[in-house]
Image 1 (cartoon, helix red, strand yellow):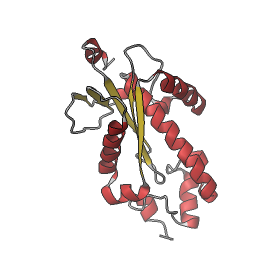
Image 2 (spheres, rainbow, N blue to C red):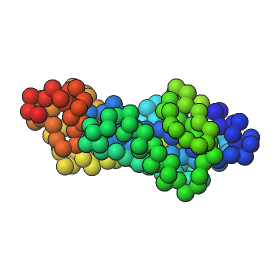
Image 3 (spheres, rainbow, N blue to C red):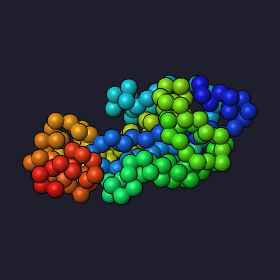
Image 4 (tube, one colour):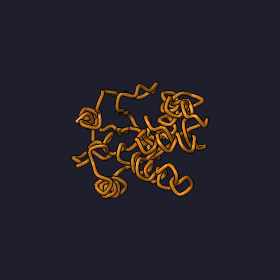
Length: 194
């Protein structure tokens, strides 16, 4: 586990991950989670069913020493670009933690921090803290998209969560983009009704 060297030194480690980076609509959500030293059943949220994520989220919220979430809107993503928006949400999530981490692990997200930072690719496969953040970010974002589905039922957000599925692209062609679409993303920008 990537946390082990830090945990051996008694350091608090925050795992950071995002959900929704490649979606065409909705927010990008970043979560930060600080776990106590231990072994955990968490893994990349994309490898879990919605039901498994919900069950593990309950465990994460009961076990974590601290956790926080930050979201950035479609408009902010359009204004800043997806990478800068991701960085901003990551810093916000870290700032919202009730405990100050002494080390941070991310999934290939390079942040400027005063603490040690590990940013390997696929960190959620080797870090329970990052996997926990992945699950938290995914569940929060999915819930937001299900809420947006009630406001914009024609797009089917509850089913595809704003990603570029055939159904979503067809709805974009038919209805044009909604306020929650990322207008700088190519499939949205090409919408004939933009």
